[in-house]
Length: 327
Image (tube, rainbow, N blue to C red):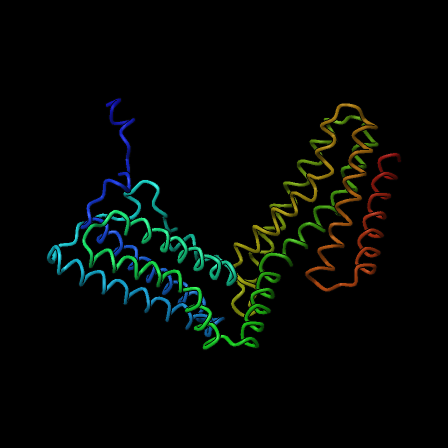
């Protein structure tokens, strides 16, 4: 039993036979083709031109697969061994489809480039282990083909996604990111940072107890995060508005709300009251300027106007909390 725990679960690459190398190459090309088709299916509703690029890349991978199967049939017959890249130590792996669905358009492009580079590395190393001349030539040719896929992808991109289309798709991807993550996250950050100022600083000046103030801040932040998260997720399913998944928006809003409040609640873990209060005030200053920066960067609000609105509003709430706490 103990020997089973220490027995390696994957085979070293150098132990593979030539038949197994061909079998892995066949499975890898098939998997990559399916990945590209999955990308195409994901992109087709919003980015039909980029979807065509991935469909063509999948067709190229399928052509490689058929060539490898023909080589295996000539040398080893019809039965292809069941061995895949996840069975081999050091072999590059692919994420399952459900971990790829949330990738952005740019992330898919970067992932495809990395896949081609990894495939090239595999064919280079595989060719070194093969003695049969025809098989070695095929693997070398496939290595060159994978290396040239960057040019193929560029040509396909020029065919299906000319510059103006690519800019339009990039702009649409940015808008979707803003609607799904930035907008609800910013709303949560503003609510969590500003609305919790009054109860936290009121509790601080009323009790002069840092631990009690921290508990008030913790409860206010977590409660506000849960409330804002559920509100954001429930009020719009995103189908008509195009704002994206309500779960993603709810999580973005709820988490940022809680973080906004916790930012100036955590300093009250410091036992010295004035040290904790001054630290919390400094954190508040940076929180408000961070909100103004995000508004300027993603919502295209002029920075000075965003700063004036956020800092003024936050200052009023902070002042109200201090006055109530001293009342």
